Image (tube, rainbow, N blue to C red; front, side):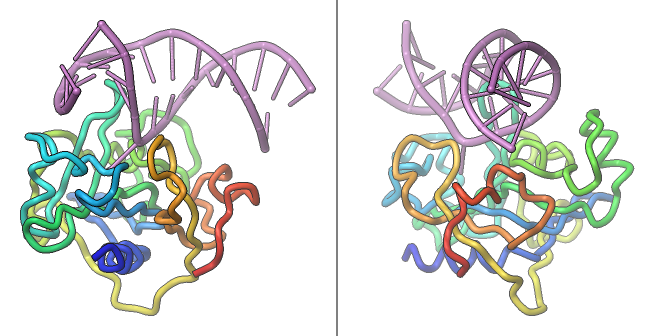
Length: 191
DNA sequence: TCGCTGATCATCT
DNA sequence: GATGATCAGCGAA
């Protein structure tokens, strides 16, 4: 059950999320194991988390701290309610557009660092909640076909419950993952 | 590089 | 009425 979403999370590293002109190659993700996971929004079934109980490969977008949008990919069969939070990526096309949306001066490799920044670079907000990622006419996912990159696992970020499980995965030594998360203190085992 | 703080509101209790 | 799956800017070391 949980291993299922963990495997999916790892398969997302190196995959691309495409939104119009902007395309992002994912470098950092975090898994949430549905109703079994106290840190998941689906731990309790509410109107907000209902989308996660639906079919996989749809977007779950939520508003955070009254300021930011964050992007998840729903995983698992209907009723499973697992999801993977997209924490960081590298913009591989549409850099000008991504930079315009960010409105902050940062190096290219940092344009989509952090879940809220990733969403902003892709122009994702609440309007996109529930988007079917297999429909190539809109925001969609291009799953990695090549070999798996070198992956490091560590504890999840910014949560108060069940933060100890190493369900955050990132591409080893990738500059689009923030220095804090790459620091020796936060570093987990290479998977 | 590290640690703290303000911004700001949808969602849930 | 309280609480965040956050970010950027600031000052200190």
